Length: 323
Image (cartoon, rainbow, N blue to C red; front, side, top):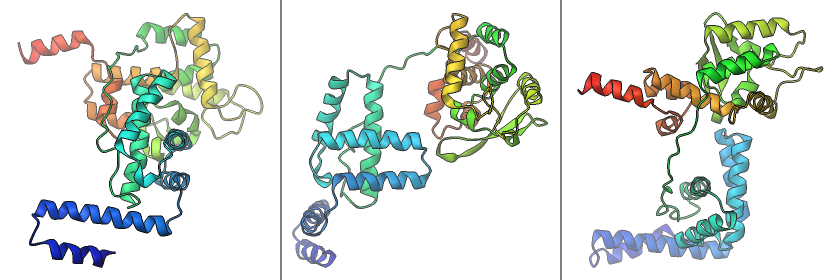
């Protein structure tokens, strides 16, 4: 096929401009590849999806992320029955519009679906299964950035005072001072914690390793909790009853939700501690790049979404640097 394309381009070189030659090359590759596909390639849409999931698994994506990719892309393929190589930009646009109408979901949800589908087609393009991704002209959906609540200092003290077991107290202080994800919290082992340096090693998204740091209060409560345990489980946090299994994400979420409801606090959940930590850090002057490092974000834009800079501090800084 490559020889045929070269011969045609060579024959037309004196009659066409450079831009026209490039366009001709694209058309020839697309048409000849399509014909070859019809004759020899029996790969169906679901097989391409399976290969994509396998590739993402090798890259180190979590099971939760892989499942999200699989569900969103599979749903798209079920609604667009066109073969992968022939799916157009307009078909995907119509799908996204219909998806939002059928599910009555927010723009944020639709943009997450768009991002997953875009990753799928980008991979197909990189692997030369398609000539060009139909997602190139479908851009990020603009959404209104909402200012989300954080946990106040008073609420943190109320949560601490209401803890009836030392495990919950240690858990709250570790979340509050490190800003780690709940999945990272439950995967921590005792051996991952360095009490002398007041730091611990966590494995974030994509199994990326990083160090996070905790304060003296969290250190004290963690040590007291570990001293009170009689089990031999290597996990840092375990259930309260025999056989003292490693605490699960749902266990942490339920426990914190119960504590919040008991105190009539609004929506207390693990991620709110993460957002609070990021906001406090930036509010007190920590450079955003360092906050990004602590939170384990690959993109600084993600870090900025967690941070709410106090307006009083903005005014003070303006008076200091500008006025």
